[in-house]
Image (cartoon, rainbow, N blue to C red; front, side, top):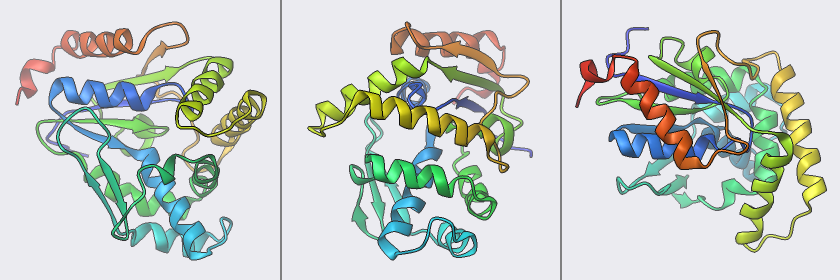
Length: 233
């Protein structure tokens, strides 16, 4: 898959911090950023909006292929605006209902196939940091640096709890932990691109390490890879 621009993939389970870490790595390198989870959340949200059953694979695959979505970034470290069918849904796609729908549609091969080309299309000069669950195994198997970022289920549930509380959403920590355990089981057991660590990925555990340290470690690994100089922008 002869991609010209270099790719760093950051895979891992829900709540491991991979989105924040990937966005910061991309920002510090001046690269593009792909939040692949957002694409699945958008398919899940669109399915809910259009009344399509989350088990109905063919219509969902069709929906994923024709998804009218735009990512608007100001070039800063912030997420920017996510537009679905012309309407901003940046906050809506972060809800627990949409997250659960995303996890279900992501298990369907037709949906994954429909989004594959779109995800690879994010790979442009000077480089791409791609965050997801199968970036290093399926979408960018030739990536120059692959990271698998994890954290304990308890820590991931606590992070999600704090995140939702800050947004004024009333949540229960026990329920969140249960949902994370179920999502891990579902993501690991699905037939289409299950969550697993690529053979050539480097494992980082963020349970007790601050985000900035994880970001520094990834940038250090990139510098040490000897590839950084070959792909300077």
